[in-house]
Structures are given as C-alpha cells and as structure tokens.
Amino acid sequence: MNSTDSKDHNYDYIIAGAGASGLSLLWNILQSDKLNSKRILLVDLNFTPVNDKTWCFWDDSNISFEDLIYHTWYNLEVSALSNSMSEDLNKYKYYCIRSVDYSEKILSLAENSSSVTLMESKIFDFKAEGNQGVIFTEQGNFKAKHIFQSALKPPGLKMEKLDVSLKQHFLGWEIETKKNFFDPDKAIFMDFDIPQTNGISFFYTLPFSETRALIEYTIFSSEVLTDEQYELELINYLKNKFNLESDDFSIIRREKGVIPMEDRRYPPMYCDHVYNMGTAGGFTKPTTGYTFTRIQKHSKDIVNALESELPIPSQRASTYRFRIYDMMLLSILDRDIDKSIQIFHDLFKKNSFDRILQFLEEETHLGQELKIFSTLPYTPFFKSIWKMKHRILAGA
Ligand SMILES: Cc1cc2nc3c(=O)[nH]c(=O)nc-3n(C[C@H](O)[C@H](O)[C@H](O)COP(=O)(O)OP(=O)(O)OC[C@H]3O[C@@H](n4cnc5c(N)ncnc54)[C@H](O)[C@@H]3O)c2cc1C
Image (cartoon, rainbow, N blue to C red; front, side, top):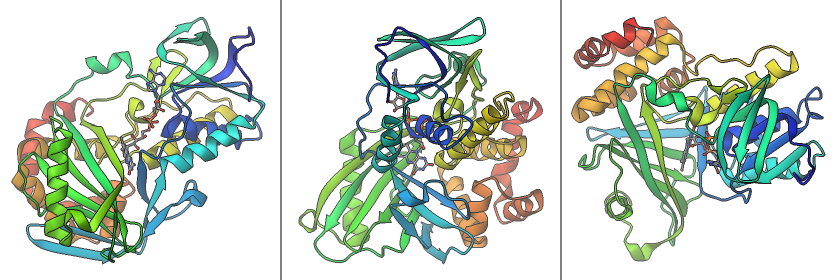
C-alpha cells in the first residue's frame, strides 16, 4: 500500500467509494495480470470493515466470492393471502455474504499491494479536464484517465424522467434464541401475511442456525418509518409467527437500509472519464432492490474492457424488455397494495421458484416470460401499460 504524501497526484485509475461496487472492481483489477500493476487510488470516508449489511443473492454457477459465503439456503418460502408456499431450489441456491467479510478480504489484499493507495477522505465532486478525470476531496485533487465512482449521485440524475419513485426501506434484527426455532436450510423469502398498514409490507427471515436468524421488516412505499415503528412490527411478528416473547431472544445486530425503487434512467457517466457504478450507476433492480450480482457482472465487464483497451461499457443494467416489466410492476406497486400482493401470490403459486428467480435475474427468454405473465391477473398490467405508455414508446 502507498500513501498520498507523495506529490504525484496522478493515477491510472481512481476508485471513489469502497463499498460493494468499488471493492468488487478493485478485486477484479488486482486479479488481472494485465492490470494489477496499474497505479490505483481508492478513496472512501472510512476503511474500517463493519458488519452492517448482509448481501443475499441467488446463483447457479461462477459464484462471486464463493469462499466468503456465510450461509446457503436450499429451500425458500413465500406467504401471501394466507397461503404458505415453499419449494426446494434446483437450479439456484440462495446465498449470503456479510459486508464485513467482503471488505476485510479485499482491503487486506489492497493493503498488501504496492499498486494501491488507500486514502480516507470525503469526496466532494468530479470533473473532466483534458483527457483525464479529476476527483475533488478533502485531501486535495487527484487525476486519472479513468475514475470509477459509487459515492455520489450523478448530477444528471434529477433531470431524468421519473414517473414512480418508491423506496424499499427496512429494519431487521439478528436474534439469538434460547431454544431451537429456525430451520437453517430454509429462508422465508417474503411473508406478506402481516398487516399492510404502512405500504406494501413483508417480513423475511434468514436463519443462520436453529437458534440464530436475521428477521427484517420491509416496506415498499415513498416514506420511511421511525425506528420505533419498524421495531414495534418486529416485536409483533416475532410473537405471532414464532411465538417468541422478548425474554426468549437477544438482539445481536441491527440492520437498516433504504434502497431506491425508481423508473428513472441512471446516467452511466458522472462526466467525461468518470463512470458511475453500483446504486449510483443504476445497478439496483428497481422492483426488487437486488444489486449485488449486477455489481459483480458490471465490474467484470469493466475489467474486460480495460484489459482489451476498449471503451468502458455504458449499457444499462437491464435491457428494454426487462425495463418495461419493471416499470409495469413499479406502477402497480405504487398504486394498488391488494393487486400487488395478489400478483406476488399468483407468481409464486403458479410458477416454479427457480423460474421466478431466473426471471428476476433477467435470464429468461420471451417465451418463458409470456408463460409467467399468463399466470398473473391481466387487468393491473394493462392499466400500467396505459399509464406508462409514454415511457414505453420513448424507449423506457
Ligand atoms: C442494509 C442493506 C442491505 C442490502 N442487502 C442487499 C442484498 O441482500 N442483496 C442485494 O443484491 N442488494 C442488497 N442491498 C443493495 C445493494 O447491494 C447495497 O446497497 C450495496 O452496498 C450497493 O453498493 P454500492 O457500491 O453502490 O454502494 P455502497 O456499498 O454503499 O458503497 C458506497 C461507498 O461510498 C462511500 N461514500 C459515500 N459518500 C462518500 C463521500 N462523500 N466521500 C467518500 N466516500 C463516500 C461510502 O462510505 C461507501 O463505502 C442492500 C443495501 C442495504 C443498505
């Protein structure tokens, strides 16, 4: 690891933001024989790894960071309209990686690399200057031919068309129980059978052992709640679902977050020479909030381009077809709680879980998608096509 004390403020690459996407890119660059001797500056407010996020995802091959998998589930359960549906997964498995393990692994590699400089600093802005990008930080300005940033919202974002702006917001507790309560092979993916008072609401339960699980209260709506509101629902759920009173468990960790659910197009570039990644780059799937797998794919695409000296790819995370599906569903989620829950119910009742995950991963083909849609109520989708027609006709 280098220090920024040197007067040289020029780098080959600057990675601004050392979260899921910044560290994924750094990892892939350091794995590349062609790129790992490039001079890299990594900037973040703080490099101390924290156990504040669990990233869950499903995959069937080439699992990113396989050695970091903290837990694997083989069976998923979904409940809606008082129907509990559960299924063993065949094609996929559901995995979880902890942010603390991910940061520790990649940052220790960076600290042992002579090509990487780590700088803790607040990032203010970026701009293009000649054939380079410039990053403005509390510690000064630094330049590189390519800057990859996941720290700041791109300035062009506000100008992009926006019809639906929801948030996926959640608060969860990782609890330890005195008695055995959980099946560690089975995750409760979505449980909608709870009061729908604060927006489209569900719980998910990720058991790590028979006595330890992360249980999160999640809502799709435009306003976040107070911590007390989420926690009251958690207490009620633990009691109603698992018959757990407050004496029966201890809270060992809290997890909280807000993920955008918007139909807005995210600009691929902050400005010339500065590329957006992660949530700031629009890599969050608007209807599910899942981002981790897309981030891993994006960093591999960037590294392939850098190795071949090709332009950095600027394609969106989703194709036109899947953007339309996301817009239609977002528009239903935005206006009709009952229809939305009916759709989730029918989706999981009438299709295999593997096929649904494949669809959510955007790996299905049109024929498979039409089959899925044929199992869902038509009217809300026709209404949303009508509502979003200006977007659909304008390229989504
Ligand atoms: C609690 C939580 C759980 C999630 N769980 C899942 C999941 O299970 N599966 C999934 O697919 N997705 C999940 N997501 C969504 C998404 O995968 C994560 O938000 C992911 O961390 C996004 O990666 P990122 O690199 O875009 O942003 P981050 O990981 O947030 O990284 C951004 C980095 O930029 C730094 N930064 C920000 N501002 C500045 C500044 N001004 N100066 C310097 N540095 C700055 C931050 O310190 C941070 O390290 C979750 C999100 C949250 C919040």
